[in-house]
Amino acid sequence: MLLHDNPFWRFSLSLYQLKRIKDACLHLQDEGGANVNLLFFALWVSQQQLRFSPDWKTTFQQLENWHRDYTLPLRRQRDELKLLAERADRSENGPLHQMREHLLKAELLSEQQEQAVLYYYYQERQGLIPCEDKQAALIENLTHCISDPTHIDNEPLKVLLGIILEEEQVEVACVQLREQIEKRFLRQN
Image (cartoon, rainbow, N blue to C red; front, side, top):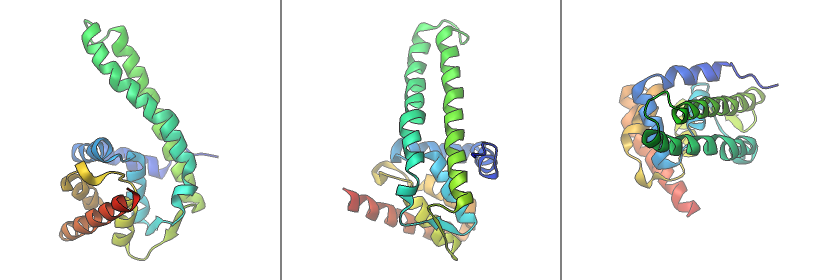
């Protein structure tokens, strides 16, 4: 049974309300191909000294399928409708703006479903293994969340690292994270 209102969901909501975190996540999503829910999960489980296991991608396949088949199409439709609504509707209460709002609500529900699936993985410890070093877990987990590092800045990485790490650790951790992301990207391409 999936729990849609869970500690992970509340953790994500509290973080996403902060503009700098929201902006960092959206930059990594738009420029680095990151799934924001997976970014938050990487942060959340790192706090609990858990890291993604070597087979995490296979284990998380249901999440990947849902993201590809539901969340991304809803987001794409919402983004496309924004341009149409700005051109066609004379007011912000016009039908296309209303339709866009409905798509936004559907997208948020789709993301909540993703988070419920991730929370289930956490509860069952699927795709996760203990790691004594919280910083190592954080770097490794975030490494798996970004598919293309070529267009991302370091600042969003530092913002995310700063959620878990002390300020004096962030700079070194950012260099390590960047190196790991780039190595992984080069191996895949």
